Image (cartoon, rainbow, N blue to C red; front, side, top):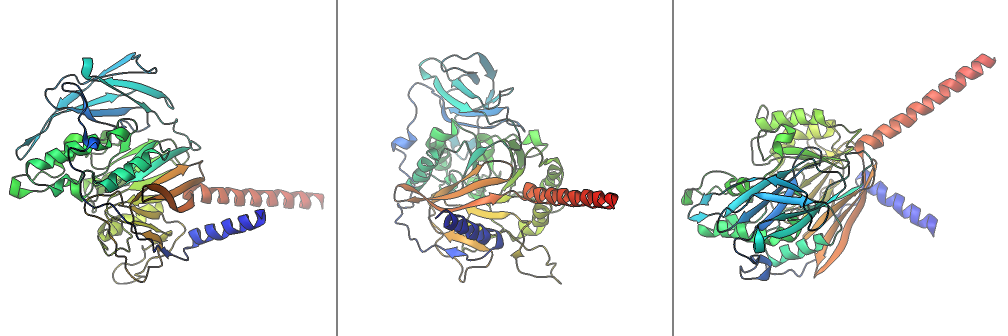
Length: 477
């Protein structure tokens, strides 16, 4: 029995590594209607108390994981931008002072948006914090990650294209029961741009309250999608990403980025790079120059896992958004392979898909193989644009299934990446199946840097051992 189990595992991992037997799931989901939850629903409830803080969310505040940015909104007047925090519930030994701002969008005027930076935190520690004053004060907590270390274990959740429908609620609730410590969000937050005029801002507010049960307690690592662009000249609104940039700060300056839309952090044993699909990225642009330099800062001896987040997938076999990521692929794919990126998460397509390790870097228009080929030095590409938004699922996949596609299914869900050590991580995609979290696609992710380096070191050790033995034998003769 045990031998059979090991054999089955070997066959499974061989398929994962070698790119065989792609699967198109036949599951057809009986989904909730793809409509936004009414504003009067309790999931959008305004907290009790006059001018009480709402829409609370945190994100990592520095490069190494020893700081957080706390953000919230007060609806009626500025109030305090102060955060009181400490190591015991109700006992706040530290205080940080932040700032606030607000903005208008057509006739909508936002509440007062606060941002406060908490730094000098201890690793692997639970902190309690309080915002607001008097009867309107609210209390939360968060946990810092373990110290940056090659064998630090850590679990990330991955969510994309969430929105605020009943399907979105199912995804959020299932994620919150996953045991993950932080969310890697791959863009398309509120879908407020599906509304017009004053309601755009209203739906940003409702989404902030909707996700607060998670975002107030653990950091969400943000990225943008096309629904954050909000280019609406018919309303006189032509500043791209306006609502997002006011509401969702990122620690971009810690990685020497010049824009909040692309940046990098280290967390536990992972180096995470966030790219902006809808910002200029071709050669010589700021994002291109930044990424070229940031790859030089990656130290796989300290952070063995190299993860990239983007919105538009560069490998996608769904009819929806097919080949929209081709321009970014042509610019960055060679870098991804050169620097041994382990996995790339994207959204945009409202379905789930995972690729084998493949690449398409040998075609230059006039010569070379124009098709993706198996490549053990390439990342795994995973599309998780299945959070549950009001646009519904992307149900049509291209037929036949391409050789590069390992598994695909048109369902709502979320993923988790459980990093165990410097060489192995467990990945799961969890389908939201009629109110139950169901694990559908799972595999062991092998670290590209340490797997290959370990084999090389082992080969060098064997070669050195043979050399020593040969010299010993020669000396005896």
